[in-house]
Amino acid sequence: MAVGCSLFTSSAVAQSANEPSSSAIISPKSEAKGDAAIEPRKPSIIEDSDDGSIAVDPSALLPELPPVPKANATLIGGTLDRIDMVRDRVTVRLFGGGKESFLFDPRTQVYRSGKAVTVADLHEGERIYLDTILDGSTVFARTIRLTGAHATGTSQGVVLKFRNNRGELVLRDALSPNPVDVRVNPSTRVMQGDRAVPINALVPGTLISVSFSAEGGGRNTATEILILAQPGTQYTFSGQVVHIDLRTGLLVLNSSTDHKTYEVYLPPSTNPDEGLLPGASVKVVADFDGEHYVVHNVTFNSH
Image 1 (tube, helix red, strand yellow):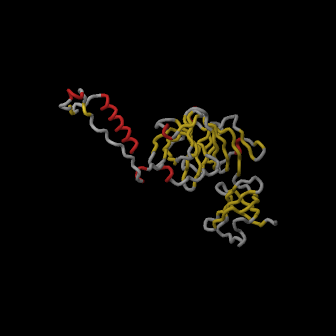
Image 2 (cartoon, one colour):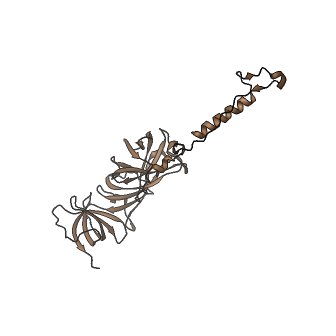
Image 3 (tube, rainbow, N blue to C red):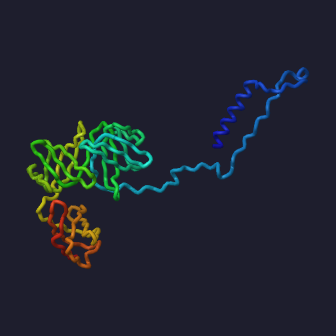
């Protein structure tokens, strides 16, 4: 603030030196010493040296944000309905119907036609695509893409409905309160493990992972569908216990086979072994019921 005042004062002094002031005092003895106006004394510029003049970057006072969690992103497409810069929230009118809000912060990356821009470049009514992840208990927009390059992403959920004759696949994603509509065409690959399977394997209750390509018209087109589990099928997991919650029966395993994390659930009547703790190496046999992997048997791996 002190710098701004100094510039203004210097400008005013320079102007008074070039233009005669209407209130200039003329000496009555000007005939002997020449016609010269007595200029007003220039005020001295005093630098503020107290602590109040020290500028502090407000961003330095903010806590450092944690890194964005590493998780598969769910692609959401729609039209920007509202942006709230106070609560750091964007509301999107989804292409499949309905509205949904997502949080953003300085970690969110925003692109327009592949070029990095800022959240300030968002405009209501624009078509946008968001790569969203679950950050704690909130849905966070990791990336926002504005109209231009095709956006891609992945989603994991349970098949609710599949109409092969119409190319329509509806699934329930854990990150979205609304069903996700996916377009399936003849070029969509359906895989189970390392082998291709017929598309009619997508029965309701099947747990799948879908790779998207967002094309014109706001439709999410599936390029590849990976069948993770089918209802009534038994699966075996071997790995290390990452987390256990006896209240809900949740057991989280880090598989030693594919190094992925799986959530399995202990039946309410289960009385788990005292050694079933984080860090334990176990083999779990579970049945997929169309909702969860339900544990059938747990054994400890020998070291």
